[in-house]
Length: 306
Ligand code: ADP
Image 1 (cartoon, protein in one colour):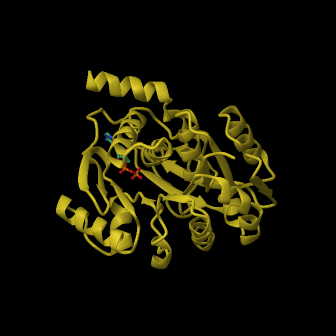
Image 2 (image 1 turned 90 degrees about the vertical axis):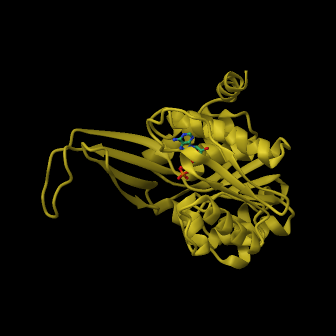
Image 3 (image 1 turned 180 degrees about the vertical axis):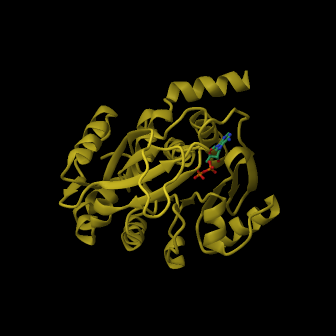
């Protein structure tokens, strides 16, 4: 049984570039198209695998080419994927349009990901029971994520929830979450509090703790992350790097955090490692192509420390 089980999304990103966006009803010719496997679930699972974590991916793809691409990718990354189910809907897709100013417009269609049902939870019940850490995001149906949290809690399994994208998750369920990793926007949305300044972020993190989450790790982009639990509230600063593309930063951070937690690191140490992984990710384009290996993260940390 894998120690870390990621139950989440597999989404093919279709990235089209164009000089400018078309007006409503207008057809224009774009300049390039590329397809990148992604989705927060798949990204986080690949991050864990590249860091040497023992992990399994669980989710749902379509019976189509994109579904096969995901199956092959997981195999290449040595990720167990017997429970990536296949359904008749197309594999989930994100249509991303980038104009010549680098702005993006994204339309995400969950498709296969939303076919993951309560019956599938029953099928993976034993896996939830026997794993050490369940890693979740909010790109499956909300009620599915909530039920998985309840089951993992019932079995005494630790839960890491990346509450992204922002959703109105049941507060009753949040009390079962061991590690919650909102970015600033998600933190504000979960707490209905402003998060413009560090004191405000701390206040919002404490509100999240008051819902019963055991550890809040609020990610703050280039500033690093604030950790809050019943012993400590502290900013763990990130590393100064030249950011080229921040896509995948949150996913790589979460993957690294999961690996460190399973290795028994203290939260502060775990977040330092996750900050290093995030800092490496933003120096490369794309999500999965920018996920680094264990050795690369350690070399980066040694370079900084020595
Ligand atoms: P998300 O991608 O979910 O919005 P963040 O932007 O907060 O998440 O980034 C997640 C983590 O990635 C940060 O906590 C930090 O460790 C790292 N990170 C993000 N942007 C930068 C940056 N410009 N420089 C260094 N580290 C970064």
